[in-house]
Structure formats: structure tokens, C-alpha cells
Length: 204
Image (cartoon, rainbow, N blue to C red; front, side, top):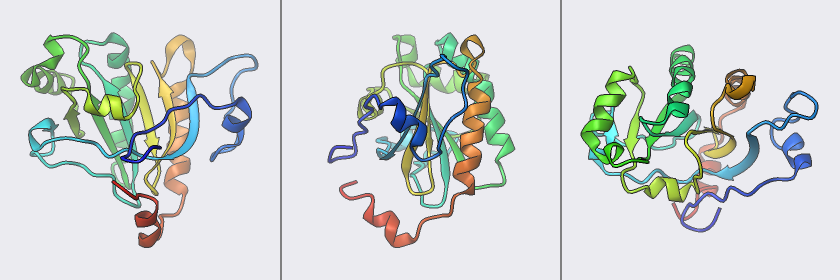
């Protein structure tokens, strides 16, 4: 991560992917999953109060001791729509543990740039977790996003530990199960000491 909190999403060697953080991720021989494991400080979400939906205008910062699922989406994107049930499922399943789901809506079309349309579609899809409207693609650029949808997992230290590019179940990839397994591992990890949290987030 560069100074100022911009996430650098480099392509990582296969050996690193197998050893990083979680250990090996089971997958079919010869099949490349759209999953990257890493360990980098999470960029701050840049927003104004009016950008937040389902929070009464309150921003949702990354707090120590919580696990976060952050997904980039656009309401007109069919691939994004196919992932939405998984996020809602995780929100319900982990409602009583320290996990928060956040959607970052970055528009792809002119219609998706209208905040009222985003609010209407968020309600239509039954999304009740926090959604931030990224109308100027500020967060998209900070996270060096390249594709709708992409879903990230952030650990209790405020580090991005994994991300999945595209549909979770594209061609039977099993991404919902795989990411849920990683969520379980992050939830099982100990919370950091308050001092350690401060030390790993300089300049944000």
C-alpha cells in the first residue's frame, strides 16, 4: 500500500497464494480460481454523509476487532446481482458476531450515477446492510478496482486478506463456500491490541 491508503493489488505468485495467511486453499487440479490471498492495510472509504444508505447518513469506518465483507457493485450489472444473495446470507448468518457487510456502489452507466436510482434499487433488492454511493469512482480508484463485482475480506487488524473477482458461482467455482470458509477463519482469529491497530494504520 502506498502512502495515503491506496491498495496495491499486485498479481501474486502461486506459491505465495498457497502459503499466505490462511495456508492452502483447496481447489480442483489445473483450475485457476479468481481468488487472491494477501495481507495489506485496507484503504479508508472516502465518502460524505449523503453517500451512505441504510446508516442514517453515518459513515462506517473499519474498526479493530471486526471482520468486514466489502463488495464493489453496480445495480445494472447482472454479474453483481448474482452475488447479492451471498452477501445477504452472510449478513444474516453472522448477525451475532463481529462482522459487517458493506457495499460500495460504483456506477458503470449514466443511470447508475443518479443517487436516487441507487437508493431505489438498493431497497428493491432488499439490501439492508450499509451501502456507500461511490458516484465519482473515488473508492474504485483507491482500491485499484478493475471489475464488477469484486468482493474483499478484511480482518480484525484492518488488513485486506482476500478478494474474489467476478461471480462467486461462475461455472460452478464454489466461491460462496470458499469465501465463507475464509470468513470463518478471520472470525476465529484474535482481535489485535489497541496499540497494534494504531501502529499499522499510519497516514490514514
